[in-house]
Length: 92
Image (cartoon, rainbow, N blue to C red; front, side, top):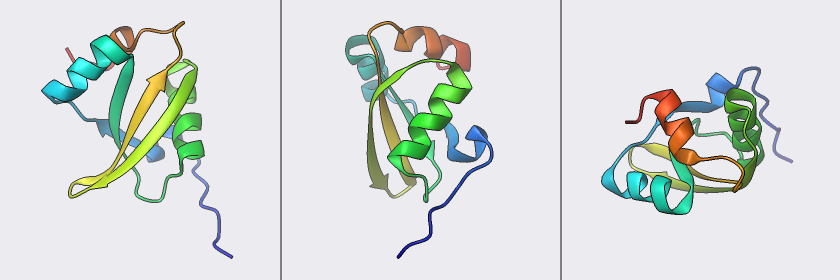
């Protein structure tokens, strides 16, 4: 059985935002943000880290592996604006 990886800090899980035209479109229209995350982070780890860092509820986390690392697309609940969080982290 595989050993569960535990992270002490949310900053170990979420490395940095990933910003392209497509992700800006998702942020505005679909209330989603995309981040590059630790390769061993699970969806549960990513949700915990995001909620801890930004104090915002997460509806869903999708993960994809790309050449430049593991990416997490985080869909926020309707009570929170992805644009507002994007402005806090300096996406705009």
